[in-house]
Length: 184
Image 1 (cartoon, rainbow, N blue to C red):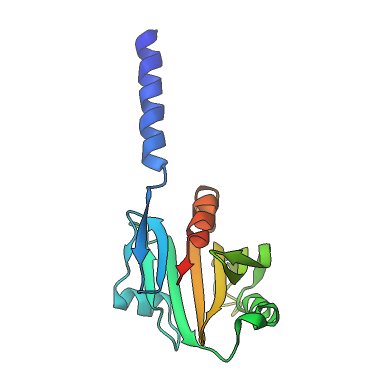
Image 2: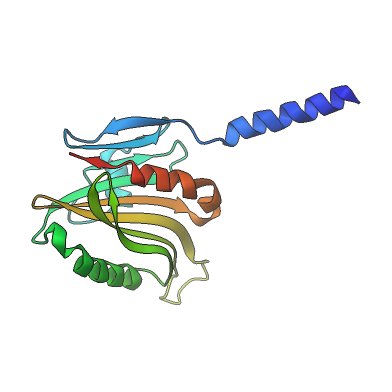
């Protein structure tokens, strides 16, 4: 009886360790920008970035989990907006997110301070459906946190994307990662 109990506890311990989030490490994206990411996240190669983040402005950096399902990205681009414009920007970028997704449920939609700097924060669950009617594919669902801030004449966009099925495992770590962003 005691051996079964010990074996059961050992299995629980091993399972818990296997699913525990890795300890974070400080990653310096540039001289002015750092973030705490899981130790096992690695930089995504340029060809992976081009496939997953097709845009006119290439992200400054993208880090991904070992299985490639969880991504953190940083994009920096010149902006005419100033830090005091974040309230107006929030409405503009919220509308853009709503346009991009078939369905979006906001968890957070706010301007908040992170490390002394104001950020627009959108935390949401989204669905994208194939609206061409040519397929019977299920909608793609994601849990995401997207943050915008202005630093000098640069807009910084931070994203964290997770498949919806992993939301419960990643929601708190994602919040911790996004709140660790430090801009000097």
